[in-house]
Length: 543
Image 1 (cartoon, rainbow, N blue to C red):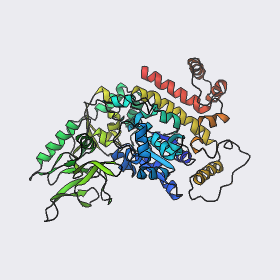
Image 2 (tube, rainbow, N blue to C red):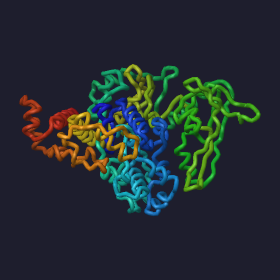
Image 3 (spheres, rainbow, N blue to C red):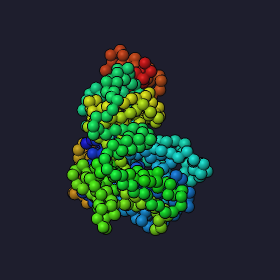
Image 4 (spheres, one colour):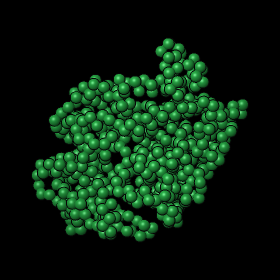
């Protein structure tokens, strides 16, 4: 599916899972959709699963938006209290569309909590209270971090999600939403065909000796001067940053974090804050900002170099940072806080900086780099190797200190689910491509009107074409639902049996054309192509 096709589907008001490989243009597509919504006066909440991801899309964390904060479970009383919070209720009621970026890093439990709050606030049993939910991300990226001490969660019967699962597509909220899958197949980051083949092999779980050999050509013991370095562990990152800081001349300036509130809440805040308890800096230190500036001077993830310290009588001696764009910023302390209603329960205060000669793979997600040096010899999590490797645009920009077997592995659940997502997307693309331009324009117009947005005159459509006529105009979330498609294609999404796969393979190997195979099996052309691709990938993986 192309970006343009995905955008057309989004404009119908369908709830969508927008996915694709790194560099396929997911962020570009969702930003284009957000601009379209705002141009028609449709209110949208732009959120993400993490703070850094939120800065990439210009939004806030979905935890903050939904008022769940750092909670890992909700009781009925919790939901009622959140729904009665005027600030939370006002922002949820005010919107028609909820965008959640980096959805792969949201657990099944957390997605269920967010969906439950939306239904409670909007007093509706529809998924997400009737909002159009746009879930954006790639499950080959890093999975969510789930606390191991989940005893309290298991005791809660309020949410019926698979709380033992990392992945939010196992959530009952995902099942109720039944989002349309838009799998973008374009590629705009990687410019090197051979390197792209390696990344594609990682996604298929079919890395061959030839791929390993290609990666070994990029081995280097040390990084070139000025090259960003990526590591899977914080300890490795801290060691590099400390070593580089010690190499600089001059005295160290230290800035200690201040805190107040219950120890448990303060500790939670510190875990989510990238700035250290004690920040050590020198002139010349490479740094990264760890929080958004309300004045817009910097965002979480902005890189720069310490040029000096503001040592005037009233300046506090705080660091002066020159950003990559040449702008100079006085980095003064900011606050991270846990708010319960109108009361701040806990807070920490620190200068929003950390050393940045090296960063973790986790924090690099979403970045696009011309070159990077990385040590993947101690990768411990599915997806870490893929995330790190896919940050760079070409093989020439890759520098490897080492790589282990886990770095080339992806989670088996993701491999299986990715095949399903691709097939769903192919079916939707084939169905949508048969719609006329006037029909799509009409659906876009109806969605704008439903949201109370600013719409132009209703476009005229060919009344003889009735593909869309049985779609309930009040149910935007099902404009591309399975039931709707089956009204025209009764076999859509029908599972494949072993016998059917055997017949498919025999027909294809005998030289039968795909259109004839589709006719004999009662399937669509796209479904046949998709299944053949899946069979080929399965055979490669077991070869």
